[in-house]
Image (cartoon, rainbow, N blue to C red; front, side, top):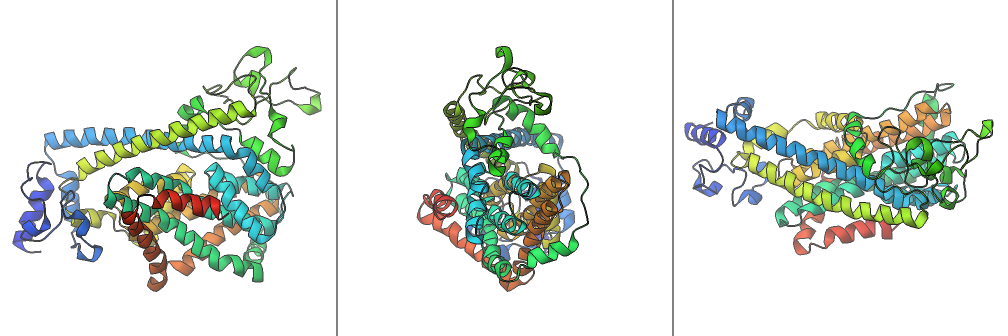
Length: 495
């Protein structure tokens, strides 16, 4: 690196934000380097970004005076504040979707279907309840209860893989105010969609013809599976206590309808709390039928909205509520969660923009440009911790919109998220003592691994989902209506 470039880099990475406001374009710098917030920031291509050293990254990150450290601390607190409520809004969105679409999703999953119908049902059910983790857990439970065959379960989880990417696509619309950010964010969100669709396009017919997933996982099965315990990630434990005070969905309703335990949601209504006391013990504790206990005498009854042992009954729980009342509550919470999601996204983006203002793109690119394999591992690890690929990709999407994470780095992170989300199904299978349940969970894992092997290692194949996502991103420049139309058509109209 030349002396002039070194001076330019040092100045940009140590000067506080706002003090070097005279230079706002790479054309005005002797080195031609672009800094975050420049007027021509969006014009720089990935292959034009220069290479920085890890020493420069460390200096930009850690060498600051007391005033700058104070600003960094305030910015970090602001980012954590908005991130927490962003995750809270995602959790509330998921609960609201389960309340609104739970009965319908349970009915969809209840029938033994042909492969094409199974694929479509898996996608639609996941889009309705906004959680592939929940869908795959239910599918694994259905197979474990012999309500669905292993072969049908394989096609259902393939569909669930497609439906899981609807959440981060919705999140990308939070950056509609800025055309360049929307283009990048929508591309970052839809690269997940395109990869999943491409994987299904190849592996779905291959499975119908050869049943390779079925035979591969069958050979790996043990003779039996011991009962295990369900595991909840640390992020759930941090966010759930607050969201459960607002709305807590009753996943048992979806499972019971899917397994045929009840015919419809009407069996759970009206909600009933013993002696009119609204708490877990009087409303949501289950009757012991073997002991002759009866609903309304020895235990209460809850519908799509339930109570929690720790936090009690949520604000939107009503004693005596019918299905219509719970649906209205779910709809109100859905609107509130979307509003909060957008507000927190805007706040998080604003804080990040202020923190990164003036930073050289060489430094940002060096810090985020990790090896693809490492990116997959990071994506999987994050998803295992948060127990949701939707949360992982939704949190990363704003960073892609800002240009902090390049689309080439987003792809392996989402592939890792695909791997990480299969752990939920494996955990659900461990709770069951049925080897067929474990087989479906393993099929989900090896389906995602197969997709990665086909579409990621070879550069020419990897460019297919990347180019497709960029094309969809560019389409937002022609009309801001592209994202909502895309979501409606891909996730609801076509299925």
